[in-house]
Image 1 (tube, one colour):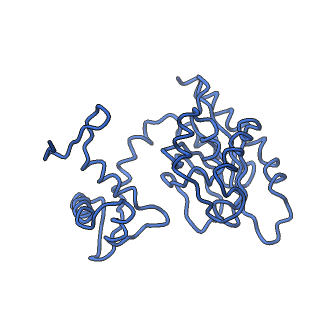
Image 2: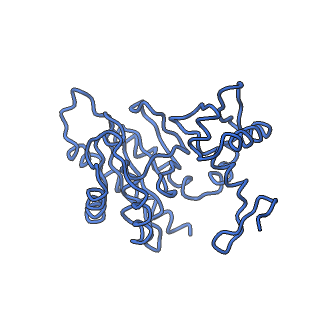
Image 3: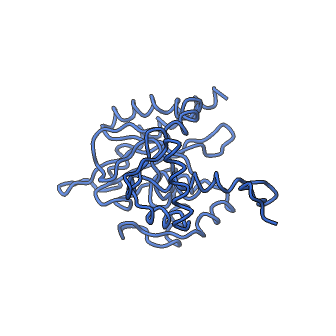
Length: 265
């Protein structure tokens, strides 16, 4: 029998569907979809228009969303939802000064992310210049399979977890580099062997990045760190050479964070 309190039993635990759906509506907004119509939100969340409207209006009443009658967008109040994590989490605090030093050494943008489902979530970033049409900041998400940090994070997942994530499918964003699941699986094996990932213009044309893992004391992967580089029309340096130029500094930075994690836990 269904219940009217918005809860449902799933897998032996009780989940609040209204809360889950409300959070999904918030997550549907991102750097590529900062402002959406009711129909856009319904499509991205797989909700009916009536249900999506109900959640949007509730979020608007609470101050997390604003609308002009046609388009909706998030307000800065949403940042409060993540502030407690960012303020208390050891990992972002440890990484920020290390990323600042790394960026100053290589003169490129440096970032850190963790895996959330099939996406990466940026938890720290030091920006040097605009190299992407889509802005990146703390909280930005991208498909893990298309990014250097995402591939590092996927490469060190347990086989069962990795198979589940890969079963969700893979789509090339630019048509360059890896375009199939089989190629991606081979690449993840190579990443585990060489200890880093290189993605050359697969997330966006003109963007190249190299990433390395950051491990917990118990050997599990805690996060990934990367350096992003622009690829201009006059660029003479190949992807592998560009990666090798920044890799020593990147690996040293990751080791600093690992040492700090081991000492703080």
